[in-house]
Image 1: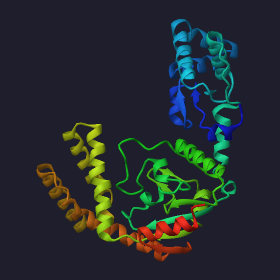
Image 2 (image 1 turned 30 degrees about the vertical axis):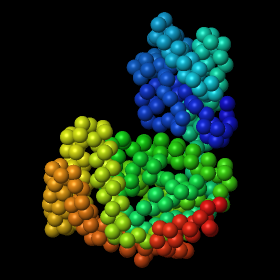
Image 3 (image 1 turned 120 degrees about the vertical axis):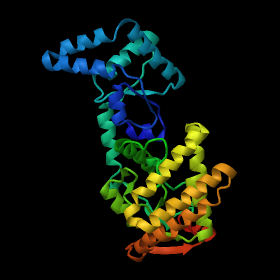
Image 4 (image 1 turned 120 degrees about the horizontal axis):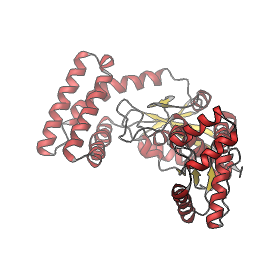
Length: 362
């Protein structure tokens, strides 16, 4: 099986038979790790391969994965295939591990399951090739605006929008981390490539993106791709400070606390959230300046203690307002003043929505 584009477009399920450590370093969307050999087994086989002939390493592999262990792994693969009959196997190079897995499945179930020719390495190379600017035929349209303006909410109305923050599992700011870790850089690139392939397959004339920097948390766009995106048309969303305060309160306080409380207990979740916000403020201490830094921490402490006693979140507006007006807004205004991007339109939420819908949703 080497029709890589069909794997993406048809959302074909993948069975990754590499070891868990290999899978953690990088894998593909729609994949599940059901290894032929585990990490320790792989290490032992690797040592044997270096010290002896390849046949000896292969024989050791058959010995390490035999009897009940072999039966258990075959059963797991067959269960997965029964649930997803169009599954495809892959290992690192599409070699011995894929072939053995394929043979063992056929022996037990008479199911002939395909594997990826060239394995992980070949499919990964294909996905990287789709991150080259030359493969992107759509014109890029960027949506910019002040922090808290509701850019993601607006763009999610359009199917030709690719949400880079969602792919990176990060909100794209100093306070943008979620409890679930960001993907590895390899997995970020793989997922982004999937999204670009799906976008191109629908033959959209335009690609909608938020006006992001190259870095989204610890993930980053390949430089040539980032350069292409930065050449896009720029639409600016103008949102009132009052709306931005409410949006930021909802996303970074109320919704974020719900995320923490659902992961921990309510009491511990709130404590962890408070520690996270405090540490995030500390990270930008130098850029805030000493006076503003301590003022924000003071307002945060007051708001948090009031919230614990009254379930009233409104006092959080005080520290959020300082961050927006005295930290994020000046940075945004500087960027817009010095941008080389072509600003084609600006307006409020409804005006920008109508403009994109009329001109760029195609």
